[in-house]
Length: 111
Image 1 (tube, rainbow, N blue to C red):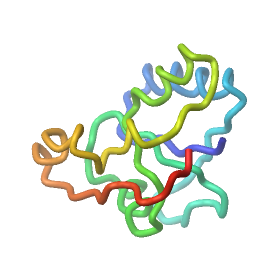
Image 2: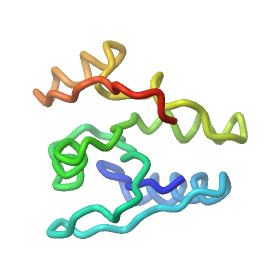
Image 3: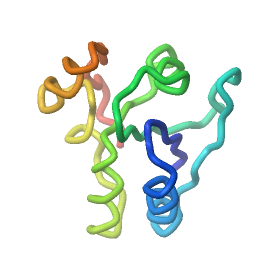
Image 4: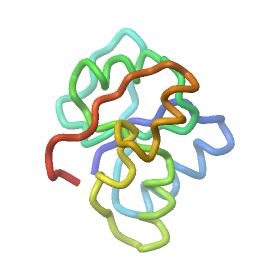
């Protein structure tokens, strides 16, 4: 699993990365002026802000997942389907409305 993270504080980011690595995943490093690497499975978002990474993910159609995806996978010791953590889903409507960001719901069964 290759992931990009955005909207995280440095302290939480290190713990998030550690959990991703423990699960056998990789954190893909990107700069604001770069495209995402070819194989990014999802972007993990803590604080929903209109960051360059989030804009790139929206434009590329990459699944945008709430940070709780990683803690859930870590607890279960396996990667789980994306759908319950999709920031485009009705579950996260209030979070999106607070920052006025529109994210479409996932349309595939990937995860």
